[in-house]
Image (cartoon, rainbow, N blue to C red):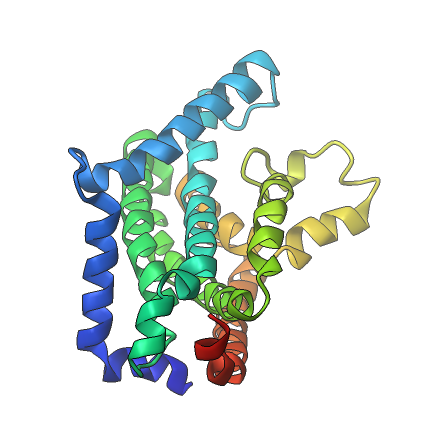
Length: 266
């Protein structure tokens, strides 16, 4: 795991890259970090209008569907934005990578760190809304933060793999962009798995949505503690912990195997 140990070893360089990405993201912006909230809030309003008012989706908790929806959006926005930005990060920093010898994994990891700030802010807002709207969740809502940390590990490992592969094979970035839209609808953000009308008739589909899609268990676990006021399911929690370890290990393996070729391919 020296791929991640280099973040500590070269923490000053990592900090410089992180601050550079933060400044570049919000330079000239009046709202600054507040823009990290605008995107998911607009999405929430659009989805709420379409699926709860116009389409009449079966509501969860009556008037609290907006909070149900918001519980899943921060995690998805973090995953989508971090993985997309990380996939391009090595190519966008090609001049730096060719001129200076340094741990190249710091580049995509700094991108993940930048988006992690937005995710933390969004998650904090959702926690505050839960404390205000759902009193019975006050004993469990704090578990959202360690679950969010595990989810960040999943995103970091995935983004590191995507960044390395895209440096070698340019189609990876376009494949990811093509997959994100269907992936969104295959992740239980707009709906609950238990409410899908065909879930009893197609158990294989339910298994795929819940256990093959590695985003589902952490999102379900966070929604459980934030929205339902219940401890996360044991299976979802264990899956999330294992997925975090596997994602980090796979990310380190893929990047270490690709590292020697990255400087020549970018």
